[in-house]
Length: 100
Image 1 (cartoon, one colour):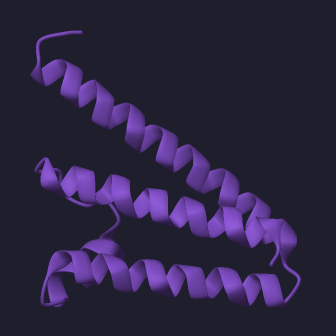
Image 2 (cartoon, rainbow, N blue to C red; image 1 turned 120 degrees about the vertical axis):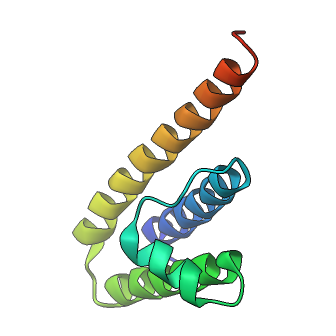
């Protein structure tokens, strides 16, 4: 399997986990399409899972079509998103506790 696809799948899982962490801390999903999927599903996490499965499916499609440049760019974007999410989660925890 292509390393780009493995990285893409891994970043999707990290985005899933950070989104769940935000939801558990009362933060609403920022992406309107994901938010809609979470609202129309029986449980919000199932909507999120559905979106992530679809995203991995798109990643597999790009890989099979030889669209490595697209996967590279998406991996960079999701790496930035995951880093931002982790920073926001940590900053929120620090703020809730009144500093380090």
